[in-house]
Amino acid sequence: MLTREILAPVPHRHWMFSIPRVLRGLVERDRSLLGLLSRTAYEAIRNSFQALFEPSDLRPGCVVAIQSFGAYGANFNPHLCAIVSDGVFTPEGEFLPLPSLDPSTVMELFRRLLLERLHQAQRLSERFRDQLLSWVHPRFSAFAGPVVEPTAVASIESQARYITRPALAMDALEKRADGTLAMQTPPDPRTGADRIVSDPLEWIHRITAHIPDPRPTFDKVLRSLQQPGKRARRSPARSHGLHSISPPGGPGLGLRQPNAPHMGAVIEKGFPG
Image (cartoon, rainbow, N blue to C red; front, side, top):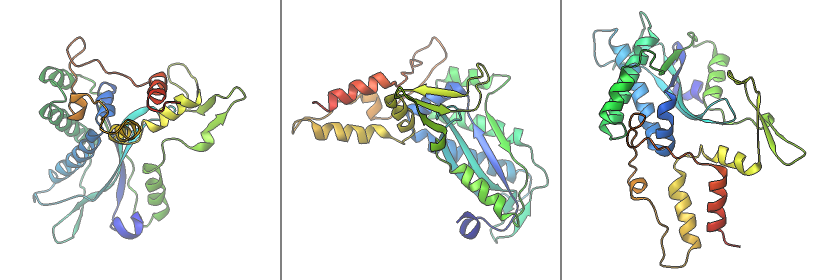
């Protein structure tokens, strides 16, 4: 579909954007920020590309896929994969190839735009925003792959399948004799381990954690199981989507990590026997 109906017959590149580990918990709790990541990545690409030409009304072609999982057993790692034209289009539809490309410039613009927008949305304190901007090694990344010519249809289709891949391939999952599940992963750079063993409940939690905005749906299920006229209690902060983080030791850093035992307790409470 991408090659037949969406992508123009011009050169493209595969791009990938990632954010520091310290910001991932914020996105995990507020999935609306995934959209902010996507919009900010596109604006960083568009503004960087426009700076290479005199007209300001030029636009690159871009298809962005939001991925919330990493390589290690579907761990939560929000990042973006995109297929981007290696040039810009004029309002008349003429394609202008890029004279040069510097992914580090795109990364720095993405970093600054995102941190400022998180601060304006009251998701980051001013102090913590400035602290992240002061890092010598920013832990943000913007990767640009090699140019793929429009005639290389198989290569473009391969990239399209990659950016829309699922969180976990079923052939990477093995049920063991004791009832636990083993997930194959790339070797851990710290321990060298190449698999994660978990019980079925932990595995369900690991996978369902990637479902966007699960809280409203889960609340509806709980309310439907309660007596008529009673409503499930919700945190006021969560109801209004307000989350923020501050520097280590400051207010707002208490990131509650969901866990399988907690999930089991909720299920037992919401589904009485």
